[in-house]
Each structure stands twice: as C-alpha cells, then as structure tokens.
Image (tube, rainbow, N blue to C red):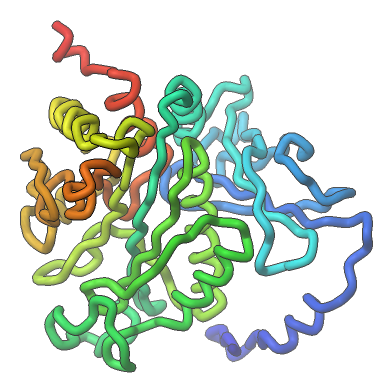
Amino acid sequence: MNMKSTNGASTDKAILRRYLELPQPENKVMATYIWIDGTGENLRAKTRTVQREPKSPKELSWWNFDGSSTGQAEGSNSDIYLKPVAIFNDPFMLGRNKLVMCETYKYNKEPTSSNKRFGCEEAMKAAANQYPWFGLEQEYTLLDRDGWPFGWPKGGFPHPQGPYYCGVGASQALGRDIEEAHYKACLYAGINISGTNAEVMPAQWEYQVGPCEGIDAGDQLWISRYLLLRIAEEFGVQVSFDPKPIPGDWNGAGCHTNFSTQAMREPNGIEAIKEAIKLLEVRHKTHIKRYGRDNERRLTGRHETADINQFSAGIANRAASVRIPRPVCEEKCGYLEDRRPASNCDPYAVTDIIVRTVCLGEKDPEAIN
C-alpha cells in the first residue's frame, strides 16, 4: 500500500520490504518496548538493540523515556522507567526480534498512576491457589482518517443493524483484511487468541484472548491491542476503542470478561459461580469505576447492555450485567461473563478487581461499617 502526505510525498510498502528482508547480524536483536501512557488507554513504543535473543523479560534491562511527553511526569523531572514484564515474537520485524510489554515507574521506582499491572500482579499472586482464568472479548471499531467509520457513506449511514454480525460480503464485513491480518499476527506473536468475528455495528469487530491465567490476561490483551493498532496503521485506518463511537441506534463496544476459578470449573461449580455473582453485585459501583471511561454512554439498558446504575444477572441474557452462558447452566460448571467492562478498559484493572472481589473477598469501606 502507498501512503501519501499532504505535499505529495509518499511511502511504498514494497520499497520498505526490501530493507526488512536484509540479513540481520547474529548478535543484534531489536526489542520494542511497549507501555501504557498517562491516559491509561493509549500505547507508546520505542525500540532498542540488544546483543542476544531474550528468552525471559528478566534478561532485558530497564530502560527509560520522557514522561513529560506522555502525561506521566513534569519536564523538570521527566525520566520514567520501563520495566520489561512479558515478551512476544515480533510479527513486523520477524526473526529473533521481540515485542516487550513494560510497566512504568517514577523516578523513585514507585509505580506510576497508570501502572495498574503492579497491583494486579499482587492480587493474582494472592489468589494463585484458586487458578483464576480469564477470556477477554475485545470489541473495536475501524475508522477512516477523518474519524468516520470505515466503509460507511461519507456523511451518511449504512443500512440498519442486522446483517453485519458475523456477516459475509462486501457490504456486510467492512475491514476484514485488517481483522485477518491481526489474527495471524497474534498467533505468530504467541498470544492465545481464541477467535474473532464481525460485530453488530458495521466496521466493528471483536476478537477473544484466552483462556489466560492470572496476569497473562492483561499482558496478552495489551500486546494484542498494540498489534491491532500497528496493523491498522499500515492500512491507513484508525482503530477506536470508544465504548460508543456512534450515537444513536448503533451498538457500543465492550470488553466482556469471562472469568472462572478452579472451583467454578469443577463438578457442581455452578454454586461457586452463583456465590461470585452475589459478591460482584455488592461492589457494582466500585467495579464500574474501573471498567472504562465514558461507559455510561454504552451501558444504557439498550443494544444488548444492562443499565449502568443497576446490577443484574441472568442465564443466556445479553442484557444483564453478568451472564451465565446456557451451556454452563446445563453442565452446572464453567464460568461467568461480566458484560460491564468497556472496550477502552484497562484489562489489568478489570481482572484485578474481579479477583479481589471474588477470590480475595475484598469489600468496600462502606460495606464494612
């Protein structure tokens, strides 16, 4: 694909490929450090050369960046540290090159406010004997450079929702090239992507990551988002994780979170699932605060969502806050689906509070008094 600038200059992917195919020295490996910036939603990345292929994040040294340019520090004390925490194969540079998920730390080696992974890992370690598993369903919307949904008539709207969910055809599946490229890239990187489908709103897609145990769920979802953003960049398309990208009679975008413990997965685990739902109901407002920005625009009680102000649960009910899938009810064991998290949520924050509520029995101060 050729990309043109406003002054007529252009880039050509065929020319780029010539250089990507150049042989790479045996003692040189590119490691792309990836982190969450001060918004808590956006990703940043930069690349360094290391002398050998890392097999573990512990083999990579800490690095730093200008936090004043990412909303994470003042200019007078701008250095923020990057701590490598997970590594993946790089589907862009190929070979021995790696993508590196990082935590961010302030000058005093304390976690930054956007570093939700630190607390999440503490919770996962405390609940390790319960073997918490997660499956994260990431919805997203493809946009043209002008911010209008990809493939929609300019200044207008496509036919109403109905034919687009899992749709096939040029007028139903808008942006399939990006979705399929992303699927293959996730598999190459080592992400446990388990599926994908076109969503209810045209130009909206979903993919699922999991099952993943503990902290791996957040690590893998963040890297999968990075891959999606990079691939869309190559097609000249934007990715939106806005929970309600188009107002009106169009579905929003969520990050439904499937969750189970070992007790839930064992025979008659339905009782543990029901108990977990009771615990989730008590902390509904606390969970909502950690489930993504602007989620009230999505959780309206319409378009397969529950009302943000009311907790509800049901079997096979996609308009509930928490759904028990029909097969789980029939088999009396399995998992629950928390449908409240927004597409722009931080998976570290979401998986953290679910484990703290269900596995560790944490309660809100007002509930204790």
